[in-house]
Amino acid sequence: MKAFNQYLKKRKTTITLLLQKPPQSFTPDTFHTLRVEIKKLHALFDLVDFCSNGFKQNKTFKPFKLIFRQAGKVRELQVELSLIEKHFFFNLPKDYNTYLKKELTKELKIYFSIINSKSSPNLKKKYRKITSFLTNTSKKKTQCYIHKKRAKIQKFFRQNTLKNKQIHLLRKRLKKLQYSEKILKDNKKNRLFSNKDNLTDLLGEWHDYELIINHLKKVIYSGSIHAQETNQLENIKATFKFKRNLLFNKLNTFLLHNIFKNN
Image (cartoon, rainbow, N blue to C red; front, side, top):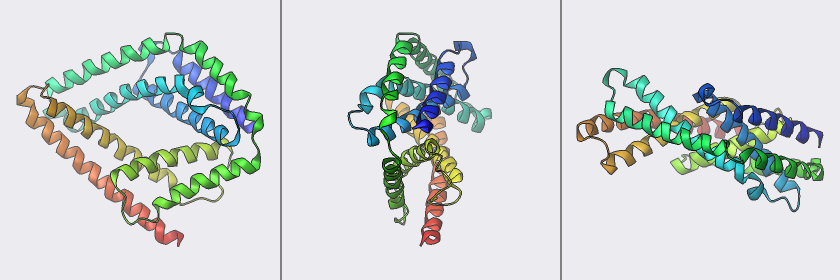
């Protein structure tokens, strides 16, 4: 399909340019954009895997997944540093702040070692690999794929309250559906609900706080931070849990509203 080829070409160009940027020009937005582009590529891989026999999605996506995960480790630390400095600027836990920056430096070093290795030729092979399968898709199969993705998301709207794991799963499925709809230029048809972007933003904020809280728990229980800062970190964790819970309630209110709207 022509749309598939155009979509792949755009992802390939953008990802290649991002990976070729010099280290000093990388910003938190760069890592965010890179991860979004790889997610979009993964949505295409998933769609082609559904429509084509013999396409080995996991094997083909493996080198992209390696970059995606490492970029994720970098971005999580960047987001945590940013939020802590934003909310606790006048009561900054200095030892923990230093610890986060050291961890960030370490993960950045690993990231650049990955993209400076043999990743570029390997990625080119994978692009060529998927190209040969793009012509084996049909409109009927792609419509079936979108229908199944929408049906899985609709299940979340039939529940009164979602748990943390369900919210995380909804976030992943919604993102993949949105990217798949864009591939097929089908985002204006059969909408599950209004304000989809608003829901995506809420899920993203909730996810950021969830990751930071889990990381704070891990560090506090490890005892690697000076005891004098433990209470500070507990207060930070409590503040972020409060914000996460507010988002949790907003998400469930949003879903409940759409249950009645769609019935």
